[in-house]
Length: 317
Image (cartoon, one colour):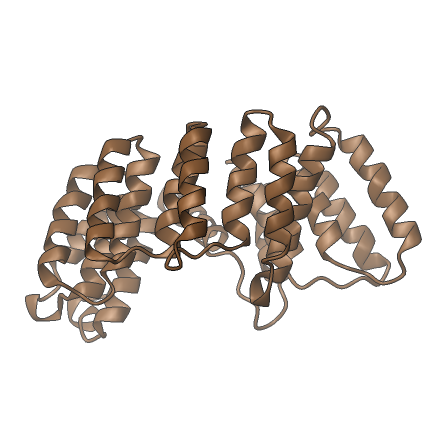
């Protein structure tokens, strides 16, 4: 597309295109696209998109430079950009910078629930249970710090990392009481996985045992709940047993069961994470994406992987 057609778009649409270019074509092409945007069009949304691109590619110095420009704009929704930087610092192990930025956010009174959860996850990543517990206590006492089911499952993951299953179980119980709204299905699926880890801590990868439990569940439950099979599909994909995952989905479909599309997304994600996009696996991944119900959007990362594969084939053929 020509620059003229691109920049007839709104700043929000340009920001979306910038992110897509970064994912599909890489950071260099995204920067080139950004440099061609007329100055009159550049505003907070576009800077925020560029910041996200730099964060995705772990370009720390560039991200910090764009963040400085964003601060100068003093936008209303700057908390999102601060959180992007916090995640980047956490991913790169820059914990001193993370804490300084979080202190700056506290002073400006712009922390959000996401802010605290990012710091909590950072403590978990380095197994700093003392720091995690201290922050969790502060969050529970602070009315501005949103404590939800994800907060406690993050803490549970920290306890699991150090083998404290008793405390992990205690915070998971707290998490259960906070599950509500549109995230209910995701929350219970996550909780089931965590409880399974606690209950089978010595046999986390015992797929045969999991299959026996699933077989027993299927024989005793006449009401089909896709959430349970989805856990099995996820387990198969995590262990690289993609043929088993596909065969299981086919068996359920042959028995008249219906999925909401999530199962196919999981399977497609398994193919993508396998980093093996040779022809037969690409066809399976494509089929998994197309099998989603009309109106349901498949995982964007899977779509991007397919686009990149096709682009490479066109170049070399």
